[in-house]
Image 1 (spheres, rainbow, N blue to C red):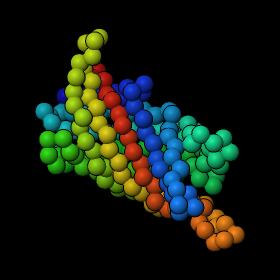
Image 2: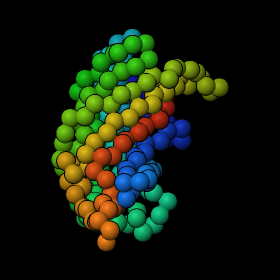
Image 3: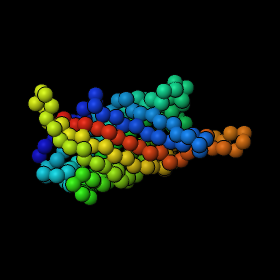
Image 4: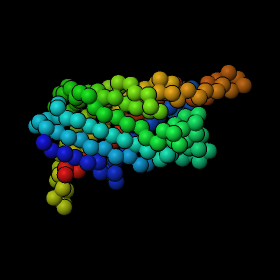
Length: 174
């Protein structure tokens, strides 16, 4: 079995959500950890675990970040982590995988499918074996207890329900 740990300096985990239904707000988690265990030649039997610290959410707007950390959204005091644990990995072709797993936000766990692309494997100048993936999934934030909502005076919804979660990650073989 091969075990890989996330390379934080070459990885990002971000999200995108509609604002006023006309544009997207993007953000990311700055503090996270992930492990990938690979018992087979390909990733079809791999196990992925991921944890993000909710207090590390960042959208380039301090007021919005504070609101996201409040009880209206992530409630970082009572729910410091977002977790994902894979339950199945399906190889679709040489580069594409469907990763199914349990996503937990605010102590609510739902099964999600992540469409992932394996970007390859290489050995860096220091002899470290590295692998890269990118992928995404879409969730309904309200299903995870992120239910805050507000309408403008004109009746427009401030924040959409669907959140696109995206990752671009590099792992280092241990």
